[in-house]
Image (cartoon, rainbow over all chains, first blue to last red; front, side, top):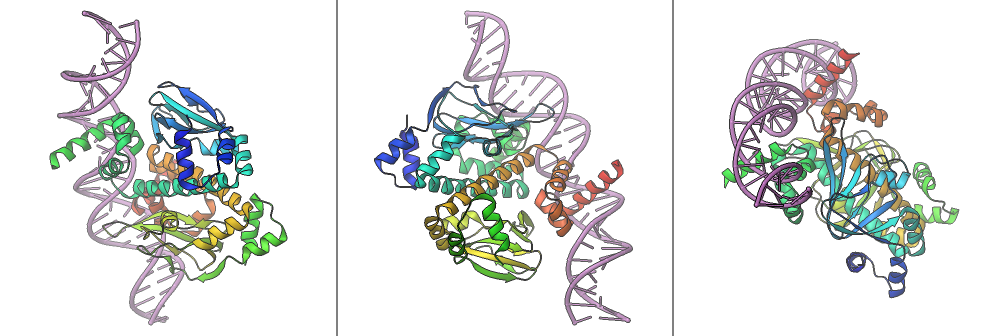
Length: 193
Length: 193
DNA sequence: ATTTACCGTTAACATAGGTTAACAATTTTT
DNA sequence: AAAAATTGTTAACCTATGTTAACGGTAAAT
């Protein structure tokens, strides 16, 4: 249950057995079924979700009822509505499971206590946030400067595994286009080969 | 020179006078003129830049030579190419000054040492990165789900000060549209009043 | 003072992607 | 096993934004 989490943490910081044992006590395991919510829009996001197994999505719903995928998450990744989580304000987005999943939840107070109790964990999260930040800036850069076809190709290259596990319509949404447009792009790409 | 930095840090963590004095020694002051580079594409980003005074921009240049503004930065903000900074790889973007500016540069080795030397500084950066992350996710959400006109209105509301200090063409680029499109949007908005 | 560069707007035309609707295959539910 | 839902594709038509070019006002440089 903690194998993946332990691997991820030890990738970035060296913890003693005692620190690892202590860290694990801050997490709450949770299994969710496909389509089950972890967070619903309007609720306060109380936990960071670490994904031991499965696949989640973070999305918003616009005025017309359209869903817009902000992030996917697979094994080894963390997902939350960071704004709601850090400020305690109602969340503007939702999180649910694309597959049956096993999560380790870290509530805000536990998160803060864990970082205070083990400085290397604070370090781990700083490094993690730096990386998440880099990826976000790269995504923003792509969204403002490259056409949908190229964004799709970048997605295939960067996240081949997610491509296999997630419906095309969800990928289209993540890319900021409609499923029909993605279909059109895929057709054009296959004709170019 | 350190006033703004000190304010920003003390907003998030309580440091003793000794810790503050020590922290300051890690920074390198630098003045830059309008249009002067802080980082050029292809170089390794060696420092985080804290903006004491002035305005910077982080941008990429596409195959056609078009500039795409990824981020602006004004007083109290940090700017870098985070991917290059953390990995030591050549940067995919550039940073230069939109106005004459005064910066405090924190080199990677100093950054790591400072965080190690003063745990509250590591805490400060974790919190800062959480906030930067939230803003990035909000921006991504907007880019994939709302039309340019609404993105512009959100920009005006969120960054009124930047609006006053930066040319319309730069704002258009930040929004992922052309200057002509922004002009068209502005005209339509003024006709709606 | 004059010239050059920058900034912002505007219009005509083009295009990437959106919308709508229909269809077929596959998967899920009953 | 059958029905319902999901997934993905396709086509005709529409729209938000891109492209190109021109123009005028202001600021900066000479």
